[in-house]
Image 1 (cartoon, rainbow, N blue to C red):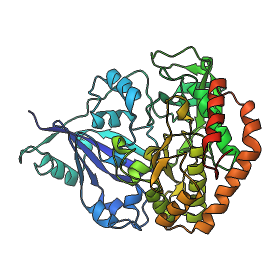
Image 2: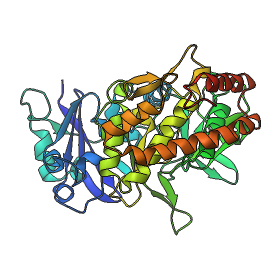
Image 3: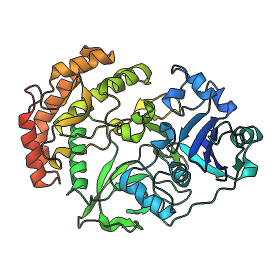
Image 4: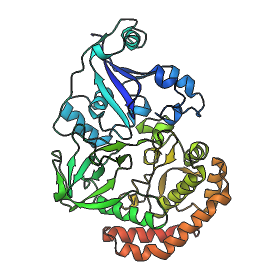
Length: 433
């Protein structure tokens, strides 16, 4: 086998982060640029590289090497499931070829990382010597040859992680188009599901109810399917609406024709877990501890986090896994809890579902959860219970006062509304509506 290697340059807010090398045998390594790793005022690439994070200096001093899958910091930027299969088919690469899928999506990844394929002559000499020697290639000491990147092309480009079909789209004059090269998408558009009925109106309704009890959400709307242009050839059910959520990792600049990137990472990236580990490798206490120790506004973020945990129970959302919680770096350095997303009443699609995604105070059963479990969660997270309990009580006061009347006017499927109302009756007395 010819031991060839392609190289991608990674930047963050225009700042050189390093170089990602992909070998033909599936090996990949990320080499950090000295000017990035030695800069104490660098933008935050991942929380684990923040100067305040334990061992960050050591982490940045060594290449990050992986086989087939990319390092979780990069792997979690890629789509999952059907969307990944659609991209891989169009590119004529294997669905597990993360390096090449990453290079294709590199201009409009979630957050602010930009990945640019390099020609051999553009690779710095010190990087060239590292990756062309046999030390990292995995080919028993054989030298590797850096080769020109075969540019991958397909008509439609899209990004963003998730198992449901969702596309990064640009809105103009009330119409939504798949973002093109150099033109960043400003909305995530989720088309109707081919497996489950009325998912867009479910998510719009659940997110609206969440906002009524103090959950921070981005702008959301239902978009008529006729407003979506140039979608790939996918089979869609006969439903009228797609769900649209404003990208909080994109912000308009003072130049109205340009969009600024805001860096973000989900908690699978923060905890260095691959996407397939999002349900079984962590718990809500770990997320709480990270927020309380490292957030730029720790108390506000853990209080908001606790509210969302309760709302996921109230709304029967069993899918609040690691990838559905994110940090946002609006000042490029300090993390804050991002606005909420992907709040869906999942129980209406799964018979007998009664568990949320991760452990909370030693249980996943939302019918068993009480204030006592939240107290245990706060103690294990190192967060004062007195700072959390009033926020949970306020959620309950607002939900009991507003949700029964609000749900009547929301577009959720009527059968789903009834299931959700029945769910409210079965919760622990502390949280019954």
